[in-house]
Amino acid sequence: MVVAVNKLDLVDYSQEVFDQIESDYRAFAAEIGLTQIVCVPVSALRGDNITEPSTKTPWYHGPTLLGYLETVEVEDVTRDRPFRMPVQWVNRPDHDFRGYSGTIVGGTIRAGQPVQALPSGRRSRIARITTFDGDLAEAVVGQAVTLVLEDEIDVSRGDVLCEEDRAPQVADQFEATSSGCTNGRCSPVVRI
Image (cartoon, rainbow, N blue to C red; front, side, top):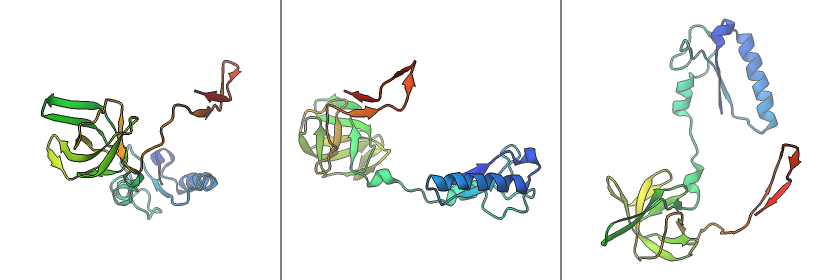
């Protein structure tokens, strides 16, 4: 977690003000389980400690904001999750091609990998992964792709393509708990 303490120019780059804000934030963060925190004193208006260390904060010896952001490791947990791609469009430009277009929202997919279409449960394998720039051997979270299956199974817009052996649960009901009231009416549990 990085905390940019901005507008230090309005308090004459006071170390005491920065230290108090940092202390208050660390106390709050500890209550919610955050332990790895970097606080950077900045003045975005004047560019202090944004890309270069500021001469106006000689008491600060940490990284600049951009320096920290460029080196911090970001964990991509969605890549480790099972493959999921909601079908946004059935791509059928002619009778020789049928692909299912969408953006991958979880996991990784490879040519030859078995998949399942939900909610029908029909199964096939990935024959090709196509993009505007050509075919891919593999596609990952965030990529917009068209998947061509080995078999012509019925897949429609709104269906989800997923890993054959790691499919999500399908349900026609859910239960939710409301945490508030509107216009004096409270609805603690909603069942659909």
